Length: 346
Image (cartoon, rainbow, N blue to C red; front, side, top):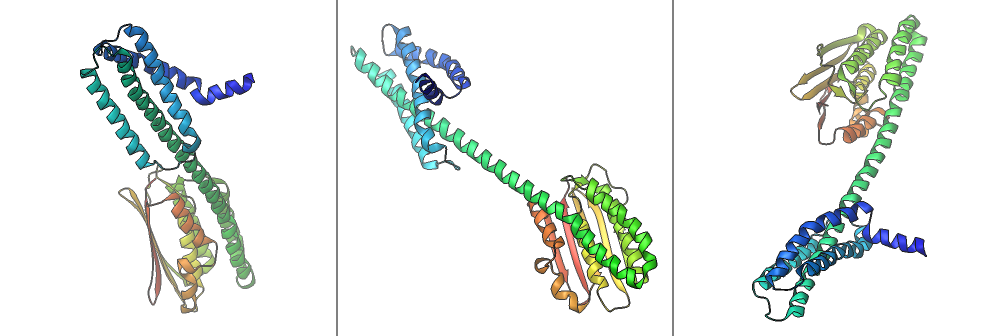
C-alpha cells in the first residue's frame, strides 16, 4: 500500500526536481498574492497568501496530472487547445485586475472565492499548457532519435555493401583479363590491395577527408588505366591542393567513376573516352564524370533504371547524408553520358 501511495505521489508531483522548482516559483507568487490580498482588504494577509500560493502550486500540478493521460501521445502541438487555454488565462487575469480595483465591500468570503476560483483556473491552465508542450517536445525528440537510429542503421547497411560490390565487379574484370591479358594481373592485384585497404579500414566513418578520398580515386584511375590499356582516352581535372579539413561521405564519388569506366569499356569502339573533374568552389564540392558509351548500354546505364547495387546505393546515401544539400544531374546524348554532382561542404 505504501509503495502504491508513493508511486501515486511521484506521478502527481513528477520528479523531486519539479517539486523544488515549484517551491522556488512559489516565492514570487506569494509576494504577488500578498499585494493582491491587501488590495482587496482581507485581514490575515500572510496566512491567506500562503494558502493561496499552495492552492496555485497544487493547481499547476493538478493540470499537469490531468493532462498527462492524453498528452503523452501527442506529436504536434494542439493549437486550438493552446489558444483556448491562453484565452482562459487572459480572461482570468483581466478579472483579477478588475476585482482588485472593485472588491465587494464587507464581503471577505465572497472576495476570496472571486479571487481563488480564477487563480486556480489560471494555475490549472498553466499546468496543462506546460505538460502538453513538454510532452510534445519529448515525443518529437524520441521520434527524431528513432528516425536517426533507423537512418544510421540503413546507412551502415548501405556502406557495408560498397566494398563487396566493388570487389565483385573487380574480380569479374580480373577473371576476364586472366584469360586474355594475364600479364596485367600482378600490378592489378597490387593496386586492388591498396583500394581494398582503404574501402575496408579507412572508409568506415560516416565522413572522411576529401583529400583521402581523392587519393583513393587516383588509385582507382591508375587501376583502370592498367586494366583497359591503350583504348582509354582519359582526361582528368582533379584539384591537387585540397584542405584536409574538408569532409565527404566515403566512396561516394567512386561509384560514378566506376560506372563510367564499366559502361565505356563495354563498347565495340576502338577508343573509349572518360573525363573526370573534381574541385572545391566556395562551400561546395563540384564533381563531374563524362564517358562514351555503346548504344546497347543506353537503357541499362540511367541512374533510376540501374539494377546493380552501386548507383541506387549512392542515391540513397545522398538522401540520408546530404538532404537538401546536394544536386545530382544525369544527362545523355548520342555519344556521352554525363554525371554532375554538387555537394555542400562538410
